[in-house]
Length: 291
Image (cartoon, rainbow, N blue to C red; front, side, top):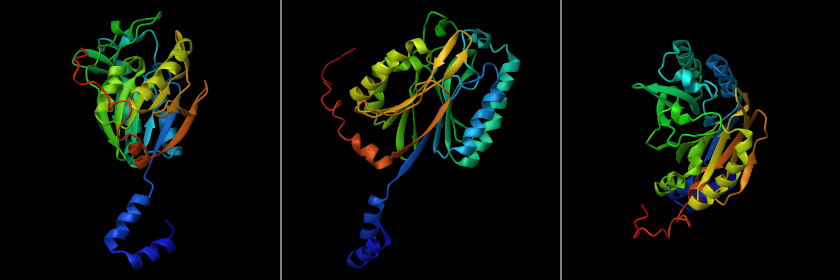
């Protein structure tokens, strides 16, 4: 609405009516930064420096980094398992210290993968920070591949995670979670507007994710942001291919197989409106016990 139109309306309508007209026509935006970057193995301070550079140079309300970005991801994660690698754990705390002040000063959120050691158990986790740790998602569906089994190293989480940013409800997933529709159906039934899946997916299995991601969107009328690690790690070459997919399965933004950063601008009200009545959910047969 331009100034001239607003002034015309102010003559014909009450102040409250004009305020309402103005409010519904102002576009509310949420800006997301997809940070497809490599997490250097065993070097949290270097990874923190990468994060700080992005936080300084990209305008976003939510920065999303890949699975295990803070520590790097490889088949030797067993060195974390009893918390005995105190040098690495101390470096992890340095990672937090280096980035949290900057996150707070920017007034944004950052979501990043890291190992979390709690009560004698190690979790492959996604940490949400606004300058302090607000929430931690512990990966529910651990991965097994021909290099190693996450189940031999990490404890499985058992709680999904939802948070709000700029009026949007956002659900969190990690890697292999994407293969289990019940998780995303639960998010959709809870009114989630957008799902975020951070991953460390190697090249040889990326094609499977490329098939499944649009299905999860269509099945649940959910937009999904997929943010994947990129580059070589011991035993793997991470595939990149991060992307934003709309609820009809359309890829509207994607990254190549190299380091890349993309800013996504979301129209908050339009996204929320597109979820009303969720066509794929309204005819669910709740009278049947599917368990």
